Length: 92
Image (cartoon, rainbow, N blue to C red; front, side):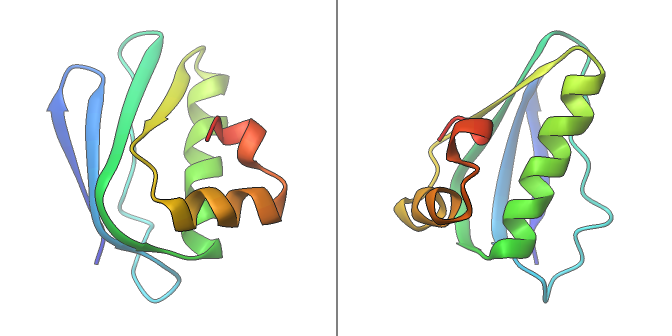
């Protein structure tokens, strides 16, 4: 199960597994400023459903005038984003 924790204002950490087998509906990144940092260092697994969730969060924040910055993505996530053609969109 993926867990989203707010570390400080505009900073979040995602941990666990971000996959189709885990409920992603309850996870929401919220913005109070112009930039949100999402740290993925503690994320152990991501599949295409998790990648889609990251894209959805980025689009939602962009619509609110906020930029999503993904930090510490795993090599597997970067490869998955490249294969899917969304690495530039996510900034990984």
